[in-house]
Length: 308
Image (cartoon, rainbow, N blue to C red; front, side, top):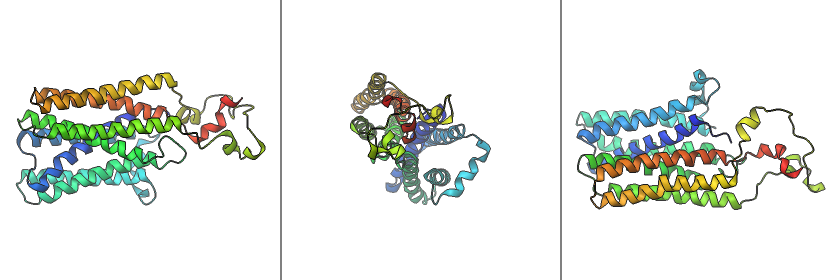
């Protein structure tokens, strides 16, 4: 699939934003709502990432002005559900922030609700891809696990950096490490499973002629480039993909987790956790590029020249 920059920005930024909202909202359940600089910077960064990511997603639409129509299909479309949930999450998170600002006790309820809605929104985003039986690499339970792990990993890491800046790091770096590890373990397992899995769609299944034997493509359906080849025919060489996997996991996984441990030990926590968050997001950009670039749509079986 074509790794569009707008969709990469959308999934990475909005995931981090909603993950940060969850990190800011859940502690309110036990009376630990964010205050002071943590409150102001936390919500500014969370809303900027979440809203910025959602706006970036509209750039991938042929007619961005019609984006509002996506909200009408929530009964059957995960894309529509994600849009509805995102708006609901931002509304509740805004009410949560105002309740903290006004010192209202309802913050203890709104915080956890905003956290749960944030995670459900990220899950809906992941299901846009995980539901597709036509893309083998996406159609796996590991897709939602990775999306949720990365969202919480990046959000909690940013929250940990903000906590450290106010002198209250506590166990936040360890929580950031755990969620980041969950995301990368799920992604590594998904990569391995995708490499081993035989494609469910082949020229034989695509044409329905498998009962006659092996099907070979005599000529491509089109003589020139078209929309399908542009959006669904992107190909990345295996050797390049493996190098990018190592780069993504190293920059966005191994190094940030080491920094989390060192920060937890008390060594320059604000600086190291900020660097950890930046590197994690950078690694996720590469990981998300691969997520799309390595995906092979079943429709490409009609264009498979390896059988000619």
